[in-house]
Image (cartoon, rainbow, N blue to C red; front, side):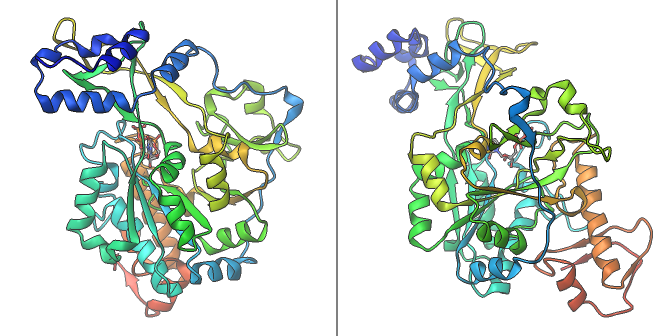
Length: 457
Ligand code: UTP
């Protein structure tokens, strides 16, 4: 009988994790190799420290006098020419994060495959890929499209892009890269959880894993060598995002910002959104759950909320900054999430389904990089124009609200092009047809009337 490698046994024993080897005798050679491989990628010391600090807040806010509302610029077209030149020079890459498990939506495939198009049923991935394709066409230079997946979404995502012939993009233009994983721990004991015999329970390490994965996979140096200087970051579940918005990218370049963020103003204190603020003379974020009640309600003289710079997760990072925060000492720290996890118990051989929270998961958040920037920029956008998150099957940020926002924006663009759309009629504009209202106006005949559902593609 082949025993587990001695050094592995010792390492597990030192951290009281040797239960993961129960059943080793009954595993096939391939299963054993897989488990050894999984364990090789786990930092048990780090996990032990994370477990010990599980009740501590991630970052305590400094005293109130060190926290101020962030200066947010209004969007203007003043720097469009700078952004467009960068696009023509191939200096901007588009990065979509699509490694999440989409558990709230309850869709059995990666969220990017969700057919969100209100008329066409186009998937989120199609919508984003068409934007990237249309940008390349507009600026005469293909835009590198970086698709971050996780072990949970990678195979389905790659297969889908291949099956759809990359939506008209060149295959070499699309770079898939996988974020890292983190094991889940039993909340009561700190022991590693198993998904099934010989298989650790692993989860994607949060959207902040994007930054480390860019470097760990070697993609960042490759991009740099290809002349990419800025990375436009967005989430797969927002079909309205104005990918590589030249006005925003241009302003980012003009101000020499290391990180630029779009901001959606919050006007209801109850809205659960992270708020960008100036914290200790740096740009930071206050998560909704950490926002002190009195600050949440604070208003300025004109009656608007003082802390209203909501974060729609649309950023532009300079490549130099990304290099610094992923290779230097400034690494991001894990957030702890308490979750209900169904798992395999090697001691009894049973699958445990818990009614209550029973596990800890660990995630990096991309916005934790903001305070590491020496120069930053925040520019306002609006929900109506650019933020329709698809999080839930029903209710807030749901399939319906997302489709409604898409239709409403399409109707506004059509109205500005002089097209009348009958009430209640669904319309959709494929990004490959028009990337913005101006392009749409150029393409449509005047006097067009839309009186039945229409997909402009
Ligand atoms: P969310 O935090 O909303 O998670 O991710 P989610 O997976 O979409 O949905 P829930 O919370 O399980 O219901 C916001 C964005 O960050 C990406 C998601 O794919 C989405 O684009 N993300 C999240 C990752 O890429 N990796 C992660 O580990 C987590």
